[in-house]
Amino acid sequence: MWSVFKIDQKKINLLKEDFRKLLGDDIIFYNPKIVLQNYKKNKLFSKEYSLLGDYIFCYHSKFNCIANVNLIKFSRGLKYFLPGSLTSQHEIKIFIENCKKSEDKNGNLTTSFFKYNLNTLYKFKSGPLTEKLFKIIEIQKNKIKILLGSHKTTVNKNDFLFYPV
Image 1: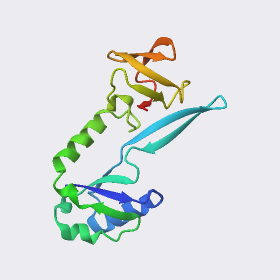
Image 2: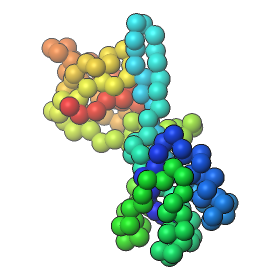
Image 3: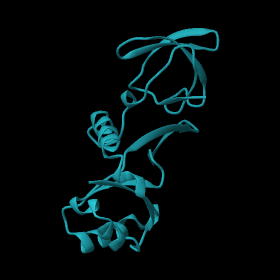
Image 4: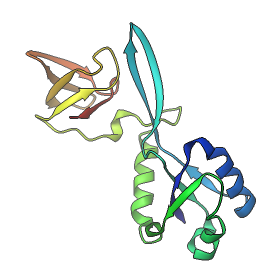
């Protein structure tokens, strides 16, 4: 059964260690991540971010019993757990499956995870056009036609990360 926990990112290793001591080694952690690239002074910097911030998914067969969840309640690095995850198992499984389908070989989410809308204003978050605003005018399979200022151009949607403004 999947559960959702809010954690202290600095103490993630302590949390995993405590969970393994209390529940055993058959526990699965899942934290979808995305890599953002920025150019700063003509240098490319990459930084990894958690898509869910301080939240993490955790799977163990014993999580269906509240007594087992209360057993790990005071683990180091755990801020709190979301009690509604018991009733939202189907939605959690679908979300995790969608994330895993969109992962690259390093386990980071690709841009195929995100949905795009026509005539919506977006901002590049990676690549040489970082922080530039554009509007999507046409979506193809792997490419999008954009309006960048007064210039129309085509970019590969897998090469850049962008988000709506």
